[in-house]
Amino acid sequence: MALTLEPLAPFGARIVDPDVDYLLESPDAPDEVMRALEQNCVLLFRGLHLDDATQLAFAQRLGEIVVKHTPGWSAEFPGIYRVALDPSANDELYVKGSWDWHIDGATMLGAPAKASLLSCRVPPGSGGETEFVDTYAAYERLSREEKERVGRLKVWHKVRADAYSTPIHLAPGMRERLEQEPAQLHPLVWTHRDGRRSLVLGVTTASVEGLEPAAGRTLLDELLAHATQPSAVLSHTWQVDDVVMWDNRGTMHRARPYADDSGRDMHRITLVGDEPIQ
Image 1 (cartoon, rainbow, N blue to C red):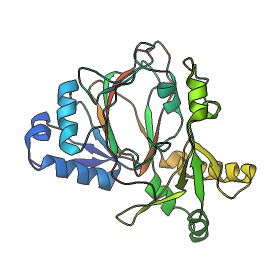
Image 2 (image 1 turned 45 degrees about the horizontal axis):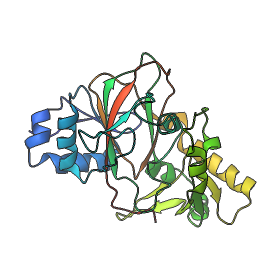
Image 3 (image 1 turned 90 degrees about the horizontal axis):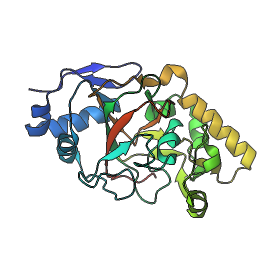
């Protein structure tokens, strides 16, 4: 059995009738999945029932798993992170902060995450869609002159509480911690090992090195609007047991707002990055 893919619009692919046993046992499945991800940026496994144990087993076939021990991360199933507006589970910053366009790990030292797998346990009654844009395609849509200009620029990335579009309640001491964390300087254009190029944008962009603050902010806002124009956005409405996987190196994503009491409950696994932004 090989994977059957059905194109999504404007990009991405749905895995037709995904089979858990094949994904967990076939020696060919890991290469097929990762090749499909590289070609499509986002993969949808509709109705693929995975509990935490099987989600981990599947992800571990695809690469090294990020494991942390801070709030939100499972102690029973290391590598599972619960995305839910539940004060006992995690800080509101890490949930509502995802309601703006971002690349996971853009403010971290080293390589950002390679990919993530998000599994829907409880969908919201309304809202809560996850949206994606292809940042490889966003770069290619630029004119030759625009490519030459942005290809020379570098951007400072930092988590700033006042940058988010939604008011966020910060846990005690969080604002001070965020202010003390150093910013990371990245090229505006990520030149990948395979020769492709993508834009590095999102809510973490703070300033453009060498440009006046206002001019830099204008440029970043214009590029973000270019990358996220409605015709370029893939929007996924969640159903129970959906699994969506995305290439974090060539996409941006965001969740759409939903009510605090909606019960939306997602379990995420992240693959360790192997390619720094350069």
